[in-house]
Length: 165
Image (cartoon, rainbow, N blue to C red):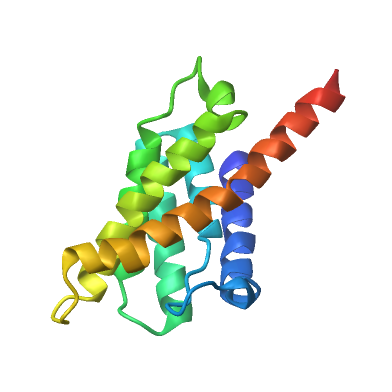
């Protein structure tokens, strides 16, 4: 139970950072920002599995929906899908290896593509943007930016392992 409260607290802090600080480091004319909540969500999914990752994704996505005053449920849907995908990488023998290496960055990238395709496809439904436009303008830049930010938890984990011994 305490472990789930820890994950909830981490995700809540990441949600607050996402909604307050991260908007100051947007790039491109489309205001692309890294998705810190997704990075935390991937961590939860790898540690606890598909069901926990999906539930954490739904709850964090719903909180983000409430804070963003946009389509209620759209972020919850996309984060649920990303949390479920991250749960596929839950493996008791390989969890630490996934979290402490470049593999974490790859998993974040895969989950970010899933999250962004679901989100932006529904968000731009009924506009003149084609699927290719959505991929090039929104999905790929957001995925790359999020992957770059996912380097920091890996560096932190390696730093902790290095100084533990």
